[in-house]
Length: 147
Image 1 (tube, one colour):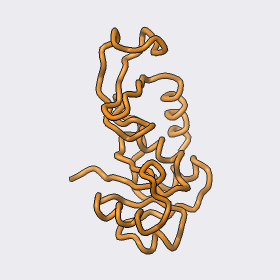
Image 2 (tube, one colour; image 1 turned 90 degrees about the horizontal axis):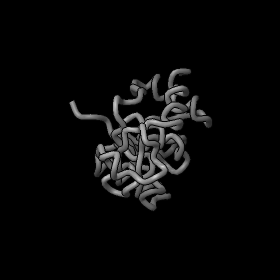
Image 3 (cartoon, rainbow, N blue to C red; image 1 turned 180 degrees about the vertical axis):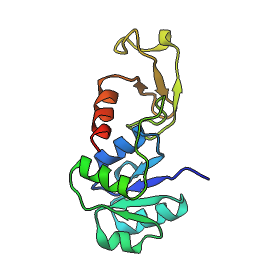
Image 4 (cartoon, helix red, strand yellow; image 1 turned 90 degrees about the vertical axis):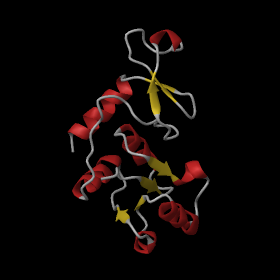
């Protein structure tokens, strides 16, 4: 079974970050320069992605879509959970929350000064951003625990 992949429309940028942190391959329309419905639908079809949207008409036109009604992040996450999307943080970070690139473990001696000395660092293959399980990771874990 292949892992579910998502495309999120322009209204769901914060949700994209959460899904990436949960390890999902998550394209965000604005990251791809897409705002209109047709290009979003073409991308969803060509990359075999489930469309997440708050737009009823757009969801109705997609081959595979989850229509969200909530505006807040916790409500959106609850809706995804109810739709069968597993939401938990992986044992190690897998996706860049910034660009969706894959993260690779990195040597601590390579990490820039802002990465804590006791952190296990990861680096995005695509954009080069550094990650570690810090306060943002803990905040996302806390949000997910309330679902």
